[in-house]
Amino acid sequence: MTRTDSLFYKDDEAPSQRARMLDAITRVVADKDYARVTVADIVALAGVSRRTFYEQFEDKEDCLLAAAAEGTTAVLNSMVEAGQTIGTDANWQEILAAGIEAYVNALASHPDFARTFLVDIPGTSPKAIQLRRDLRDRFVQLYVFVAQRATEEEPDLGEVPEPYLRALVGGTAELIHQHVLTKDPERIDELAPVIVRLATVVIRGAAVTSPASR
Picture 1: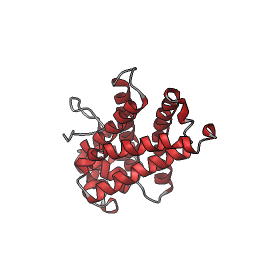
Picture 2: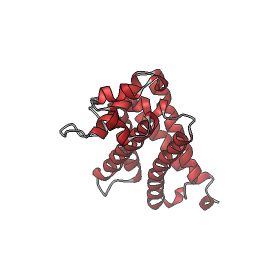
Picture 3: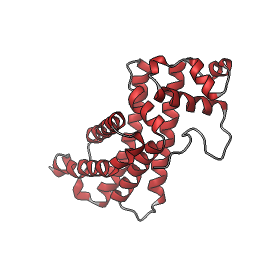
Picture 4: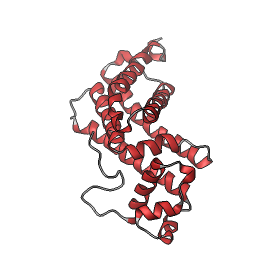
């Protein structure tokens, strides 16, 4: 998997100071435990002053959560674009596979973000907990779209209950979390077939218990 420079700016553009700080905290946290990271570490890597940092963020947690939110938005956008790129004739399984492949490819291409987002963000602070919920809600909505498309194409599948899709998002996060901790983060893309199969089983299996099948 080819590693690209940053989720926060394109390779061919001059990054803003904010983008450099978001990128810096992602890299610093991935390199050493979040508790040991200081604002001095962030500004040194970003090449900005402490004054500039505090003009943008309240503290290092605020910067980290902003990096998680904006980085995840970039990943989500890549998933949506992948689904759109394959064409209007694509079926729900092709859209599902394209989105999941885009997701794991983005994480594999940005292993520092993958480690920071999946290992360090799941903290216990109220802000971190709320952010995790908000971000997972956004992933759930992507699966809702695919599940609705599946029901339109195959009415016998029935409606997929949202709790199933929420569990799918949580299960996917756990698979990737374990991969980051125990294997090479740059090879997260190896999980694509597993996650595609899992999602397919969840969507197809919902017909067994959905109200529409009773």
